[in-house]
Amino acid sequence: PAPAAASSLLARRLDLVASVSALTAEALRLNQKRAGIEMDVLRLELEIGRSGASAQLVRDLHEAEGSAMAIMQACAACEDRILAAEGDVEDVDRRLAATANET
Image (cartoon, rainbow, N blue to C red; front, side):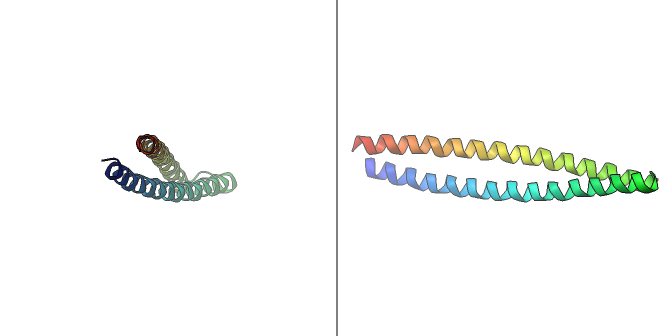
């Protein structure tokens, strides 16, 4: 039973590590998108400062700020999923260590 349990745990660990990797890639993508939106916000603020607050610029600024907020929330949710998956990896590692100690 111990080798089968260890094999199952190793397969589970491999799946979890792949999930952590995919989530990390998603977090990087979201952070890049957030940085781009923040640059848009700065550009719009500068334009408003230079030429005044036209209705279109103000709308564009509010839209960009809303997008930035949504991306920040998505980043936070992704970070939470990464932490949970890393915790699952730690649990599997403890179970693997226990299985190794049984043999």
